[in-house]
Length: 242
Image 1: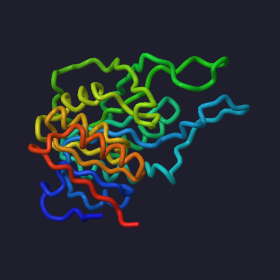
Image 2: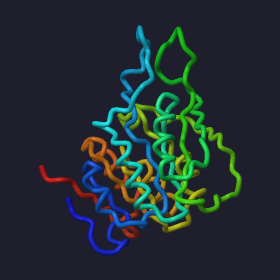
Image 3: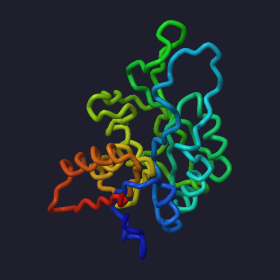
Image 4: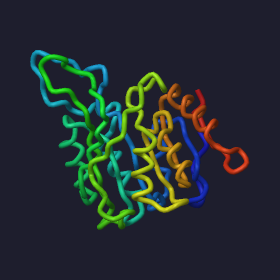
């Protein structure tokens, strides 16, 4: 993996295939304008009815929540925004950790306009996800002011990217445009198939993506390669040596 050294411009428009616990500490303090991410907060094959259901706890082997929050706070500029997707089962734990450092601003609701998987007979069908909205300090102004916290965008079909949690580009663009200005830097430390990077390119923002799963990374690499104009931008993709 290529190291991040030097000034802030050295890692703009780059994606890394690496565990973010290795790369996050190398990102300079107060160098990022927005964090927008969907961390691996649950097992998407476990949403089935069980005999004794319990509150779902986050698996820290996959998602180191305290580390993620502390590093996010460190790298964000003062006033910058922070968005984290979650569900009703993990909302309380993630929110409590965020509130240790960030100003909790709101909970956005993404209405997916289709029903999720789960108990088909004994429960209500999930049709939404939460997006926790926080800020470092008081927080900058949104653009436009006072937007609705209910966002309705159809879910991306799973078969399109072989990834069960891909977020729709219009949703990500909406958030990015509300919380940043053109050419500002957006970080996604759980980048998946690079949906956040694609939205950054489409809105004229810089990106820094981190994804440890090589299959997802390769899908994202292909996706960005098809999207970018090679005469205007250069893809910077780095993989760890095996």
